[in-house]
Length: 444
Image 1 (cartoon, rainbow, N blue to C red):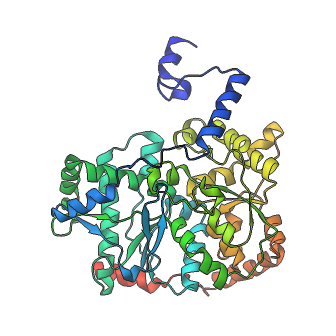
Image 2: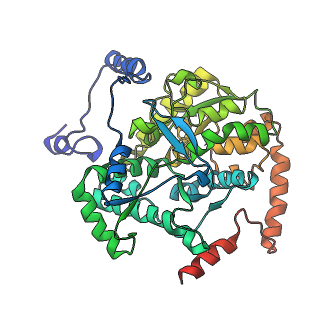
Image 3: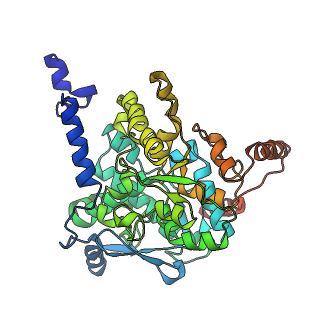
């Protein structure tokens, strides 16, 4: 390695990224350490950690911020997080904070979620006045900064807070539900920074003031940052009892939980002693369990999917190799899994779209990859093409669908007929388009 390369670091990541040059034995020892110590909850759960929400109440009391509270009308359910703290998950009157990656790469992800809410008769707002969280740019390139991330966070959550006014409701009528794990992790970190830093609050208050995104001169911070998988987790038993139509007890399921869900601000992630012994975060896994599928653990459960943001840009082959060797191959060989479920856009995209790379190295491992909500929708009779939209997936889903007792060929034939109806102008909507139109008209 020459001096120039050494200063640059591995793959241009900076001088602090250097090849470890571990022997095969040393590499195995390092991996064994991770399996032994990191897979299990080794944090001292008896030690009191700082709860950012307590400081939030103080700031609100002092008149510095407004907290967007979860109210009784949001029909919250209480869950326990890693340290046994209570977190309230709203289940109704929700404001959908959509994911750019889901809408662009995995459209069956958000449509399955909305399909469930329609079938449950829940109230929600799927409006157009939302931006991307910009965390992709921050983690992928390092170009972003905390002030810009905080401003976008506050801008979107202000919109969630005031969105009901356009429809004749009071402030805080709808509560934000974040679809994307990246947005979720980013927003939790940013909320913590905002609460702890008066300097950051002062800077972004000026920015939000120029955008007209203050309420009584104050920034709006949500009581809880809530991920869609948490909503699905608390609704899982109702889904299984009221909506499930297909027996999935013959389906072997493995789970991949997003790093940005439970490794960032880990004290906020939901754990349940009845789900994988409480040693894994409960979301996703609990849904498969409630539906009656065979939930199988595997040795690399804790591993990242390989996406890593920066990796997918500058070291794409590393990303692809990692997802094959550390996730797909292990789940297939150890768990004999029929499907791997995820809870985040980047994870599912990475594991779903990159399985073809294994063929270049005679590693022909393939497995259906989809979101927990897509699998749940299939189990509840949702159309695999119109709603779950498995035609957008690169991983092979046909065998799984057939094993669930759904005819892939028949579903495809009906979908092709439906497309002809759409072409003729006979369009079905999951969401009333008039609501979006009325919202835009109200804004002028």
